[in-house]
Length: 354
Image (cartoon, rainbow, N blue to C red; front, side):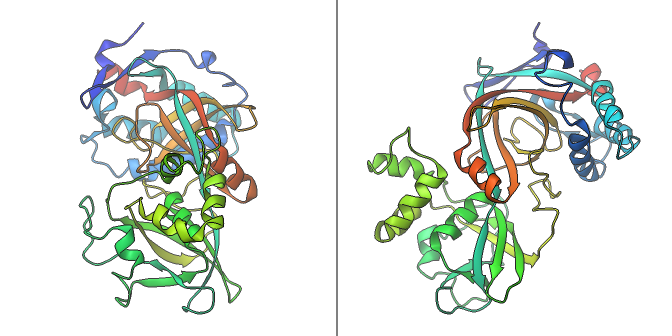
C-alpha cells in the first residue's frame, strides 16, 4: 500500500513515495539500543520545541505543523534516562514507520564522516604554515562568496585578522573542511575544537572524481584514505587537484568539548546515532531507521536522528553517518560507501492530519 497523499516530487525528476510498514518489519529493531537513539532525539527536541506551534516544519509530504513535533518531544521528555524498554515503547507509540522509495528505488547511498585530529599552532611558524580561517564579516548565509579555494589559498584573505590558528598539512586542512569539524592538537599541548562557521557556497567538486579522470585512481580503489595518500605522495600536483573543489569552509575555535561537534541543527552530534541528510527531503530532528552494512560487510541496522546536512548529501535516500572521533571512526568514515535502505518515523498526529 502506498499513501498517495504522502507522495511528492522535488525538482524535475526525483520523487518520493512513502509506504507504511511495521516496526516488527525493521531488521534488528527489537535488539537496537533505543535509549541511545532517544537521548540523541531529545537533543533535537531542544530545537524543535522552539518552533512556533502552527509553523509548518519540513518539506513536501513530510511537512506538518510543528505542534506534532512538540507533542512527541513532550512524550520523549517523560521517558527516564535509564529506561530502555520505555525508550522503545516511546518510538513505537509516538511514530508511524514509513519505508521510503526515491525515484522508484528503495535503495540509496550511505557514507560516513568523523571528527579528525590535526596538529596546529597559535602562530605561523616552522611546519605550521596553513591558516584555519574564521568567518569573514561580509559572508552572507546562502549567497556565494566571491572567493574560490584557489583565491583563498593564494592569500586573498591573508592579513585580515581571520587566521584562527595554523596547521602543518594542507591535505589535513582540506579534509577538515570536508568533515566540517574537528580537533587540533596544539604545539602547546592543549587540544581545541574547530567547528563549522560558514562556507563560500562556491561549487563543490568531489576530488575523487578528479583523480579518476586523471587516471590516478580507479572507481574501485577510490576512498578517502586513497585520496589522502595520493595527495600526500604528490605534493606538487595536490594543490591543483584540491583547487578543483572551489568550495571553502570557515571555522570557529573553542576549548574542546568531550560531547562532540555540533551539526546543522546546532545540537551536539552523537556518534553512530546522528545522520546527515538532504533537508530538501528529510527535516532535521526526524528519526530514521537505516538498514545498510559496514565496510567489513557486517550488517548495520539502527535508529538514527537526522541532525546534520552536507553539500554532497543529495537525494531522498542519502545518509552520511557520523562515526565520532578516533581511529575506528576514521577508518569507517574513510571506507563507508555502501547501499542501504531507510524508514522514516513520522509523528502519528501528523500522519492522521494529512
